[in-house]
Amino acid sequence: MTKTVVGILLCSLVGLLLLWVGLHDAARVRRLRRHGVRTTGTVVDNVRVDGHNGPSWAPVVAFVDHHGYRVEFTPSMRGSGMGLATGREVTVVYLPHDPQTARVLMRRHMTGPVYFLLAGALAFLSVGVLIAVTG
Image (cartoon, rainbow, N blue to C red):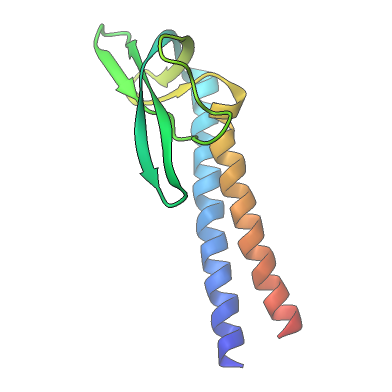
């Protein structure tokens, strides 16, 4: 009984946390689409990132913001199919008051993290419900 309650609580808390982060990220994407400044950026490098699934490569994108400052960022979405070749020009969108919120203006880079977080939230919440029903 106690293990069942702990399992339900743990899965539910993790699921709700992922849901909150996913919805927060979805709101950021919405703000970027509505109020973001669009500019052209260039992939200046691909750096090796050591993650829990082993090493991967992450592109570094540089652009000049509306104040004339050079800004570099690494997209948060990584994995197969997410790479960008060095030297490639991409459209970048960022909030005028915070250029570090920049994202590459491609569907997979804009909404990929949102879908990933929401899918994780759904998985944890589903497991919590499954534990509650079968336990």
